[in-house]
Length: 457
Ligand SMILES: NC(=O)c1ccc[n+]([C@@H]2O[C@H](COP(=O)([O-])OP(=O)(O)OC[C@H]3O[C@@H](n4cnc5c(N)ncnc54)[C@H](OP(=O)(O)O)[C@@H]3O)[C@@H](O)[C@H]2O)c1
Image (cartoon, rainbow, N blue to C red; front, side, top):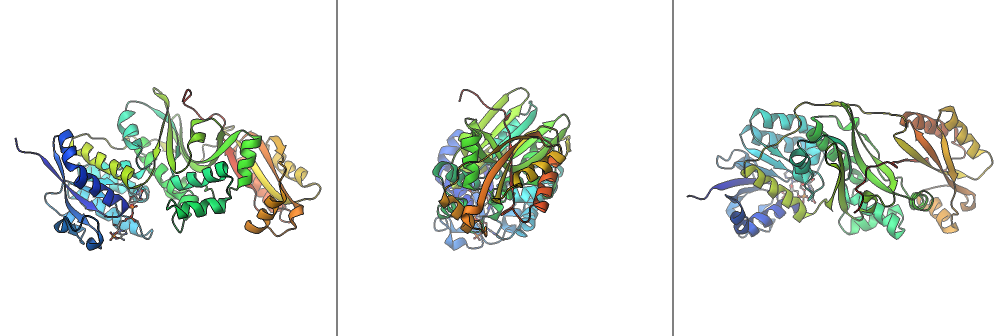
């Protein structure tokens, strides 16, 4: 019997695109032994073919025209691994994906930013043209989270998902907690090792995690929201002092979590730094690793941990999607969308940590407590660590605090489980009234003591 050949067009030949070429050109024969077909890269689109690793060996496969792939009659699967040099490029990349789907090709994409912004149009084009859209590489790189949710848990009912989805942030937070680095030094180290971009905004402000959470909302619940609908906070205001309080006073660690929770027919999603108990499986995920904790009705709690980025893991996810399509498997986003609620502001979902840096003078703590009380927010404890002279000089210099270091007073207040809206209102009032004593804006971190865990690990 003649060998079945599946022809692939590859848009993009950067880190991930070359990783895909390495697997298919390098391991193609080995793969063919395991599959009932041979994968063949027919064309590769890049603006600079001659600079590419595999160009010398396969010059005819390279093209500088994306249409050579989108309109190619024999290509049945398009793998999209284009970067976005400017945010506006998302529209162009979305148009390539949609045109390929309209031409009857299946598409595999690594691009969470494009799916977050244009997911509804893209999924709809796949449905209308009866083709497949796969996006395993777009969330958590090498961790097979999309297939776990879309296939592995297809008969289950996911009620909660908590993800460490950005390796750069996790690397920075681990550096502060485990090596006592300042935020600035941990970020610099991440940039030196290539984990963080020169402009790290999308990572540290939580936007990258938000895009991934939006991709998961689309898959799990058929929910397509706008970026602003997902309340998003980054890690840029966290400092070593917060990790000192977290570990020495509260027995917790701080992680940037993308969270999705379902309550009945309603779903909410947020991205923010969260304090979780030391010893919790997510608290122990360090460095640039990613992790996803899933809570579901039948399987209860499971956790997947692994590499969230890099040529090898990400390219593996793309090629695995290609293999899955070639073998005839099929799955898509939930067909009956649930309702999305930006604020499921349920009483008692979170406890809170408030960190203040004030000018040392009488009456400040009681003023702050007064505002909390007026908003029916119950205080658990007021706590203060001993701060070294060095630490106070750091506050003055790095945080731009204009004050005699001896007069700087850091302290924290922890709150009982409270409504987020009430906490936000109280903090807004404290900020407004505290202009003359507050040295920098208070830092608010949610504490999630009841996060489901996988025990016994
Ligand atoms: N790197 C990772 O670990 C990782 C992990 C998960 C997901 N992803 C996703 O995978 C995709 C590719 O990432 P990457 O790290 O491989 O990026 P990269 O190394 O920067 O490569 C980007 C590729 O896209 C092309 N490109 C960028 N802007 C373009 C434009 N305006 N028009 C045409 N081509 C353009 C580049 O073209 P030239 O070849 O012409 O220079 C290059 O081939 C992104 O969506 C990224 O979010 C990456």
